[in-house]
Image (cartoon, rainbow, N blue to C red; front, top):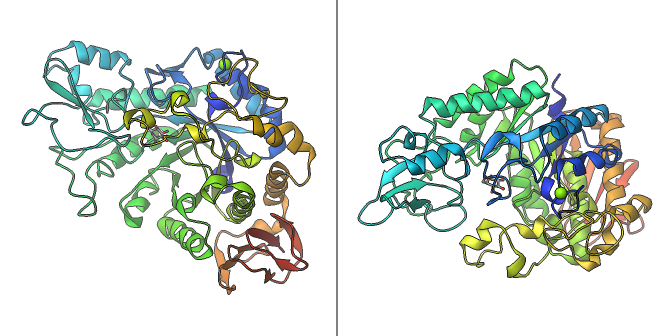
Length: 504
Ligand code: BGC
Ligand code: MG
């Protein structure tokens, strides 16, 4: 029952998807109200971002209780209903697991803060005395600033993300036991798997050595060997529940390091950022695809593909914005959905939404706050979805959305795109339907064809689907075959720039 090997997983950023109660924040009941939409879209599974009890310093990635639902999102009964109804719609449900850190509001951290240096309460985190009046080592937080915060008693605690997200100490057996309990708790409720946040970061090297200068050696903050033991524990629990999947967010030092995360007894799927980081340039796209295959070669894992997530500017914007950005994002959607392996879509990608350039005073991402807004942060890709109607709520909320939805999204409404066969939503629906039902999508390897400069073309080996992409600036002949789908209008029988086609 390896349903996930070729699955299309749709990431629901719960806060921005649909608000059921008018408080301006998306919630679980909102997701439930849209299950019909998700079924119509044709995805196989959902990945829900964290909905656990949280003070929301990092919008839920700062978890105060991993086994309960935050009231802003609903409650456990609402979660159970959502899960049952999603299953009735034929959708699997995977959830985010955040084992690397807790919130400072977690009872463990509150106890640690109130306990003395050297106490068992502090042993669940990384507390250290400072060095020369400063932090214990030179590590930086991923969000900006030092990775250490000092308490009034002069001990410092480690946080690779924001100061509201203290890192757990994975040499402490209590920390292990608690994660095991959390994993069982949700599996018992019936979830189909997990996306493990920062799966490469849990373990820290002995002695917490300083980071070398950039480019001089491996980054000691990540990819320490000890993470594998934690992942093996999680996998061993999951293996008692047939058909469930462990996916992990992985930033490994290199391909060999990546492959270790997807060994037989670790993650089923490793998420990579290769395709997402590739510019819209055929050679770079091909390198990213080949690299993603290379990283899982010799492992049991399928490759995985993603063009967007809640941490990264949206493809339309990354590829240049405006009509060209939309055309390129549509072309890349066909490339992504032609590939064998697991595909991760991010809500709003199917609507061709761009990033929103928000004013500093509405931005909420800690990455923006902690850098004094020199880093715009990730709010631009987290603006709530425009479903129908107009401002301010656009069918997302009956109140005021937590981030403003731009007025001109009136021309990207789900309601209108469903009716318009030329819309980006219709392109995704058609592509997902073909991916599910057309026999050309068999085959788990790729064969590359020769292609003009600025273009690429591949076929699923042993099968009939051909995907051609033109990132150059002149129209080119199409490979032979019957056209199944194109991302934009053809130029006679030529494939124009910024366009992709499927042929069989
Ligand atoms: C998630 C981010 C989050 C961070 C800290 C990441 O890997 O994708 O959204 O801010 O982990 O939990
Ligand atoms: Mg709400």
